[in-house]
Image (cartoon, rainbow, N blue to C red; front, side, top):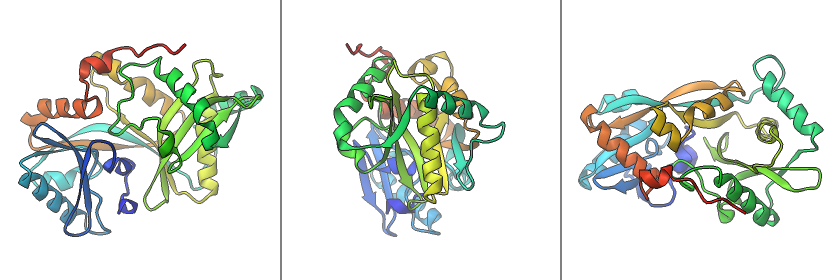
Length: 302
């Protein structure tokens, strides 16, 4: 059923702590139960042409469970407003059309120069292999030590060696074969699209390592006939405290280097007055240990 999902957030319909329900028309809804909220990453997965009916089934189910519906990122805000729900733009999805993808031209000049610098530094990109687990785990842990709040989850993946075999994983290695950066990509739209999830590099890696890694992934996807790649949705900035938890401004600037088309994604709550409580429920879905833990620096990796 996940193959029917056509937006980049749909791979996160499933995941840790999700309640997953098959709907009467064959659709699928998954949510995290937080208090009285059913927190969904995105719209229910619908059979082709049955989006409205699937949404009705999902809302009916959530109502029977005596929960309030909360959708983090929908691409179809009008469908929710038509059902009496309230929406607001909350994020933008960075989409790249891979038909004829190239780094040539002015739009991606910065990435092109970074790729050249990475090549001169002896970096290259290779597919993920289980034999890389230990070294990749060290890179991931070192990256986490520079952040706050550990691994958050919900619509952000966690480093999981068992899951790597199911994803499109790539690593950047130096001239001695040491892993310096890694990415993972989820498939969606029946394999015709990819969405970037993990982006992790060693604090000692050459600066252009991640640019090389993402650019080479995009080139390979295009060569394999993948139509669309998403660099992931970036939340709209909500002030200094929110930036401490998740630095949206710098992340948007980084992804802008790849010249994506930005498409808005909307938050859905039952009404505007439910917004504050809904945002707290979302924060808890991302960080079950609470906002204070999400702001706490991680331990330094020796």
